[in-house]
Length: 266
Image: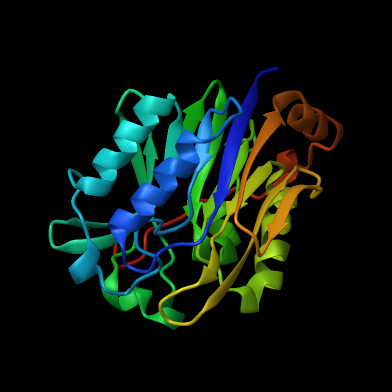
């Protein structure tokens, strides 16, 4: 069975300073010593979780997307994380999935964090993105999406829809217990690996982030967890470990059949 390696970059983020963030992250990525296939950055890694998209948004031809393509090609990796994107007069919190050959996919954050006004500034996405690497299927989501289990739920009972559920985040320390609990719950209920990558440090609004980036297996066992400190960590996930759990405990076969219907605003 194939393995898949993820490198988690839990880092501080310079507030609304793209140049500083891209330089800092490039140094970290180029300094990774282990062989890795997917490098994961936090939510809004180039700016911090800002509600000023009018000043910070870029197009899909902008500096940050071009930077991601260049770094992915240089290190021959998949590079992923979310950035602020403007498209046809709308602003999106967009998770980019950039391949080493320059091709990319994207997922627009579905659940906007109204508590911070994200719903006022950003347009919601209306479809999920499940990427594929080496026979693995990876469901890509962003931060607040974690609180909404229906959006992440495996939707097929013939065979599991995906193998890894990935969250990139700017999740505050004051609600870190919810973050850790929900990451574990998503892994158990979907019988998949969960990778959650968060930032550390204080943002421009004085909100502290403790990181607590985690990798959890399909039984809810924590394989990696880092609190407070910046960290660069590479983990190898094993498909046979996942298949063994699904075969011994085929709970996914008993799941309810359902469809997600679009909201009126979509």
